[in-house]
Length: 203
Ligand code: ZN
Image 1 (cartoon, rainbow, N blue to C red):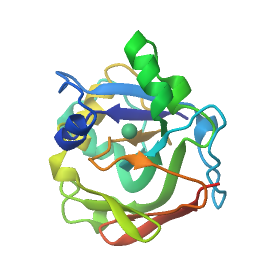
Image 2: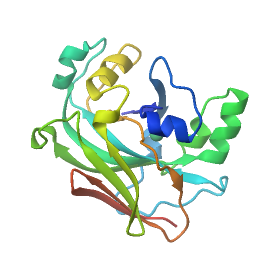
Image 3: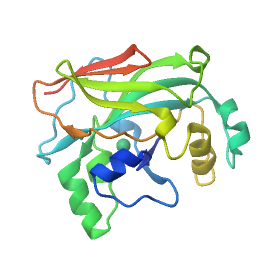
Image 4: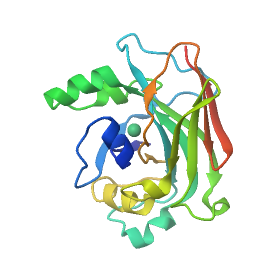
């Protein structure tokens, strides 16, 4: 399975990193080895001094497909979740400046936190989900999926032009503003529409 990640999908986050608003979704992948195992702490890797949290709504693909029309994209998932796209911001900035791929900053072991899943039927409107990340009891990121530049169905349609979507693939839909560093001893809790979907410790 693969993790397909969307970058720069919220205007407020594009502004905080002083990036350009893209004409098309920014897409990158993480390998399955980047998934943080359940109940394990996130261990800060030795090669970075600036690991940032990025809380994101997740979509789990339940049907094989490619070239999916956004009209039919809703048939390709029935569960939503919440996760963290951990990013070595210092490494990413270096790679971005050189125009190099981001994998060393985004695809390392433990860089993908995947919380519990919820049936999408439990939500009134999947295009208007509120979600948040708390660090040590204080909310550090708060988002609404209604503010995505590309909505879930548009993302599915777009990425399926490039990659065949397979059962179990997971899409990270981008992070809102408020990204910031994590430190050893931090406790991170993610909530989607008031449901706690993950809680992890940083080591
Ligand atoms: Zn991200």
